[in-house]
Image (cartoon, rainbow, N blue to C red):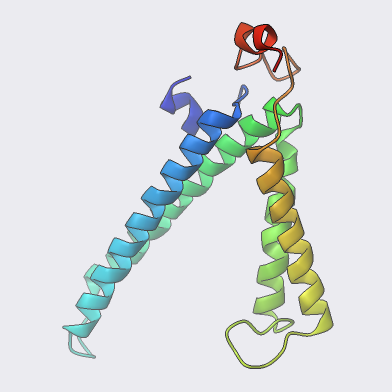
Length: 168
C-alpha cells in the first residue's frame, strides 16, 4: 500500500503497523510545523511595533489552518481504513467528532473551566469524562486490536496469506 493510498483514499483496509507508522509520522510532522509557526510568530510579534501590520503572522496562521485541514483529512482516511480492517463502517468516525465535541462544548460554554482555578461543574466533568472514554476506546480499538482475519466487506486482508499461515 502506497502513501498516496494511505493518505488520500477512504477505501480498503489498513493493518496496525502502517496505521501506527502513518499516525506517528503525521503527528510528529504536524507538531514540528506547529512549533515552527508558533516560534516564528512569537519572534515576529516580539520584534514588531504594536501598530505595525503583521501580514507574515496572518499568512502563517492561514497556512497553519490549511495544514490542519490536510492533517484532519489524512487522519480521517487512516482511521476509516483501520475501522474497515476491524469490519466497521467509517461512520464510526462520528464518535471521534462527538468525543472531541463534548470537551469543546464543555469549555466553550463554560460548563468546564479549563486553565482556571475554578472547578468544572458536574456536567462539565461528565462531558469531559465521556469524551475521554470515547477517545480512549478509539485509541485501543484502532491501535491494538487485530483486524478481521481474511476478507471482509471492505476488502481483502491486508496481511494476506501471512496471517492465515501464522495463525494470527
